[in-house]
Image (cartoon, rainbow, N blue to C red; front, side):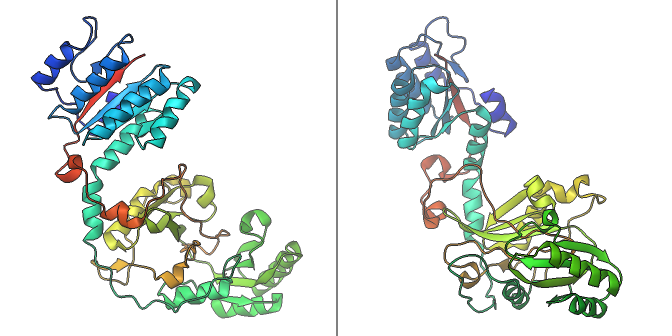
Length: 404
């Protein structure tokens, strides 16, 4: 399974050098299934011989990495062996540990010594493929030159909660983010007058931080075509949200298109990240997002949009479309939000850029199912590469299948 997952990601399993095969013949029993890549060490190999097999594989000149697949209950003892060889090697040594609770102590030991340990072949192959492309990704990231931006002035963030909608809208306008025509009002009669001024049909929403999901709370009305409909809907929405801390009623002209979530968050490792995903009611239903470290170029935004599957699928109930993002910046320019807009530590997403004013959700921030080890951003992108990544990665790996 491990070999299949590696090959599926174009990570080759090269033939071992003749000297390596000869050395393995002197270490493995006669009944070993194979002495070439992948290597079968059999179930009865001692820990001493297992360590020597790993050392032999690490020394092979054609291998850029070694994967040890462990399927037995020899937890701490096996982990000690793996971590010792890993600490002495200039090549990465990864472990795919497939057993359950009997080997948990071994996994904990490898984690404590920062030896990569995975629970299934797929995640291991994904990690190794990502490491292979790290040099190119870092070089591209460091070659970018953010343009000078005339962003909005610094805004003091409240100690708790988010900024008021009016403040966020003003920040977005001053930052050059396109807005749908809208008006923030306080009464049903004011909403009707605003709708006449904006032009029908309109969407009507109750603005309150107490109701982040307006669709479920019944705090919005869509496609209102007359002043009377707006007046009646406004009274109905205010009655439904009685008791909530209401900022006002937001009247927006209805527009057609595809709803897209756009946000910014701070990651402990990579710093500011741009997040793009399916917007509106799809945002949390699909959890379909993509992200990049800021600053980003126009080309990266195009790539991000292509990674959000829902934007190009029938799940958004629109015909297939071609990605042609609009930008007022030149093709070579970059987007870089100022620290004043981001805040010092909390995430302050931008407003959701929607093809329809029907969305009842606020933009969310990017999250990950597994929390990365916290390292400074300058280490993440500026640390010297290990020898196996210093040149053009070949992606070769010697997979040592260890069965206990």
